Amino acid sequence: MNKRMMTAIAGLSLTAGLLGSAWAPAGAQTGTAGEATAATAAPKPPKGARAVVQVSPNPTTERGQEVTITGHCGGGKGLKAVIAGIDLKNPVLQNIRIVKDDPKGFVAKATLSSKIGNGVGPVFVDCGGEAGVTLLVTHV
Image (cartoon, rainbow, N blue to C red):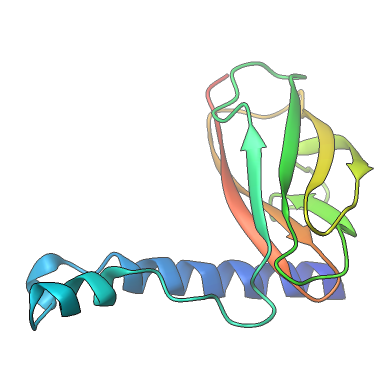
């Protein structure tokens, strides 16, 4: 596994842990209404997992469909790579092109693999010190 993939997987793990704690059941919360509101507010992600990424359209509906990956680097140096899925031999997205690597607002384009089926898979971004992840849903 290369360093970029390890960084992206670490970012996914951190993000999943933070989302899991932010969505704690209401019965698990205690205190006044003000305290409950503060408790349910999403905490700031830890250093290394602050990039934000979106994929559009999401869900995708056609094999070979072009998608746009956008977001910001959350303090990172700029978009360095986009990785889709865990299996590097059979990636979810192909022909990934970074159009704009600006850390305050990046843009990349890619096409959905012709071999993809229905499902959900991660899309990771490496922003040179900060990583981010989102889920891409496919209905093909």
